[in-house]
Image (cartoon, rainbow, N blue to C red; front, side, top):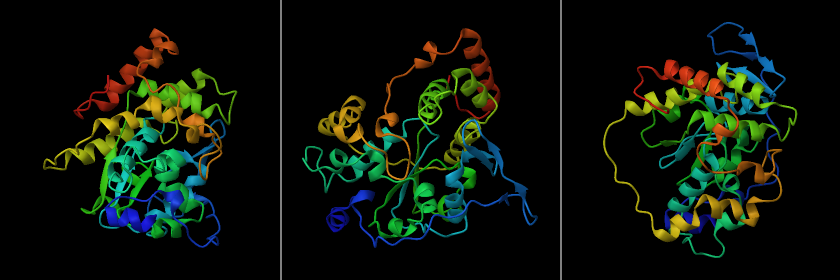
Length: 311
């Protein structure tokens, strides 16, 4: 399977790559944030409401931090020529982008109409893994076992990525984001799976305070936006056939049996929680006019002068 993908010039699905069942134990959580320099660092601040900790200015799921630290220190992941990394804030179309990118890059080995297509057998997250999650779980060796070109993903802010990725011309980053108001609604629905008592008002306030998952969300978006503005040159867009577009429609993807039952690899979230409406403007069903006005004012203030307009 992996050899066929490599020969055809496309990525292999992460779940289809086999390594020795023995793997490194999950990495321990660092007790302090050492991002400030040579000092001892500050103790990691926690948010019991969402199960997150503040690390290097970003609120992340506690279990991801060991992997982030390891990747920053050059362990658990070594970039290669041809690597493509899909970056995004949570609940901004990550699952769909993974499916689109995987089907596009692997179309030589797996035509859209193939009955054994990996996306019919696995979820997009089983095909395209989150680097920090896999490394935290002790499966960095499996990332190494993936044949090139590798298609990977991350929720890490640009500021936390090591120079081995950001300064590497052979490593490509594709970023996706969405209307932040819709992001808040999707985030709320997602986090209610482990925390059913989380109210929408609480989720709204956490987001405005910069304490949503991988927040502040404005720093996450602006980090990649500003990095993208420094790049030059035009590259041709890949041609998408109608068969591929039909295969990858949100409605088709979310209705597949493989995306409806069981947990996603290395997570406690059910597969169906990664798909909801796939539409735009659902925030109008949850935010009052006052909340929407306040949020828009926040966006205008945070994005002022950046050249980015998400309103």
